[in-house]
Amino acid sequence: MTFDQDIKKLITGNHQFKIKFFDSNNNIFNGLVEFGQKPKIMIITCSDSRIDPAMIFNCQLGELFVVRNIANLIPPYEDNDTYHGTSAALEFGTCFLDIKHIIILGHTQCGGIQSLIENTNQVLDKKNYSFVAKWMDLAKPAYDKVMAENSQATLEEKIILCEQLSLANSLKNLASFPWIQRHIVNHNLSLHAWYFDLATGIIHAHDQAINSWQAL
Ligand SMILES: [Zn+2]
Image 1 (spheres, helix red, strand yellow):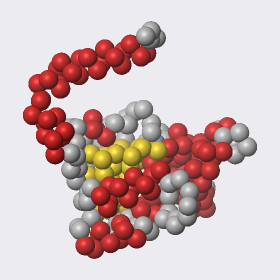
Image 2: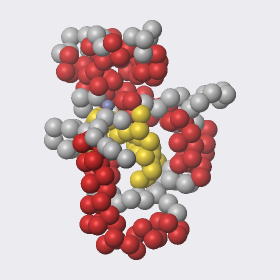
Image 3: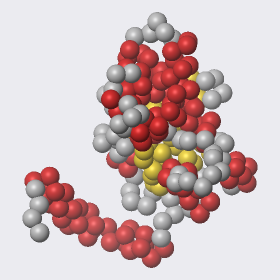
Image 4: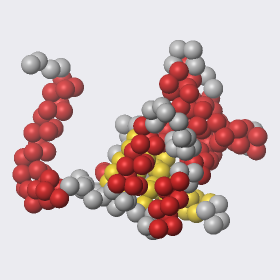
């Protein structure tokens, strides 16, 4: 097999991981293989390459059940016979792993939200790029609210507002799943919306009681 430089870098990285981390933490990995995964936390975050939940939260393998998608969006509960990737992960995490916290982790400079606000990006061209464009419809309520209530804000301010409002909207959609509601009541499941600042590394959490963002 021959590989280009990008793939060779990954292979070298894996060899280093094996020597420096895997081999010296055998007990952790043996436990994960023998007893399976038992994460308490589920994170839904963006596919953006600058976000890595395990790195951001200094977590080990087995601690986080993660699903990533464009702009960390949660669809509303829909009981129809089609393919629901994010909803399937939510169902598995909630009903089979019995996780105790679901965190929707958004971030600054989100390309998906930026495309919506700037409205110039060909990514949202539904004729040629139907999957991303359709998916980003999920952030439309946030977009509409920003445009209706903050039309005088700068472009940067609108993007931040839309990123944060979209998180609040996803939190609302998350609560629309019947088994999530059941687990909130019967299994102490908690839902959270957090916002990661790429420039500072600081995370803000949405405080629903006062509808504002607080640094953690
Ligand atoms: Zn993003």
